[in-house]
Length: 271
Image (cartoon, rainbow, N blue to C red; front, side, top):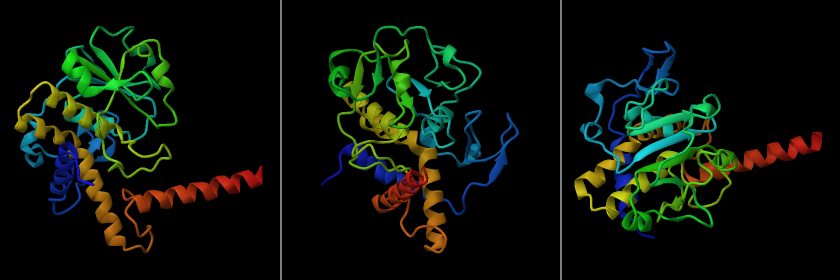
């Protein structure tokens, strides 16, 4: 099956993320003084020297304002790198910020009491409409995205978002390029992938030129570096300690699912 334009651009971009000699070293975050690699998930700080950042980062823009609601505070929450690229701060948020992150486990009261018109929740369902259709017939000023596990989406029922009109992606990969497995079925992508494909659909619908549209792949810059670091780690191991299949392949994800099934079955026997 041939890849769509957005996915093809993503695949090509992930290949360019392999263009570094060694993995970014761990450094101390200047804000929280914690040792981190690539970025700090607590302070949303990029920890890679500016001289090593791609030029596309400087001109990166979204076709809408974005709110990311963290409902599972994991270091692997893929929406955090997007906020880091746009200079998000966990201590200051303005409605004019291109991207805002709300940690719902600690800052639930900080969520807007209500959203204005032309705000949409990116969440598939019976009442959701395709992103491109809404972008062509209405104005999308802000998109709200949930960064959580597919099985834990209760934050969508919060008073500030439960009545928002919903949109869903026109098209997305059959399988995620993320390295975490899930049991939600096909076409269930990670948060950063969903943001990218949503932005692409909106940009295409409102007539962005090809260069601006293709530059959206830089939303996945930190994601791509993390993915390449993991790939090299597994490649160097050669299946000695780690599983022989890369974790972002379907074989690797199925291996993790099988492990979880065995663990769950063992737990039930002990009950």
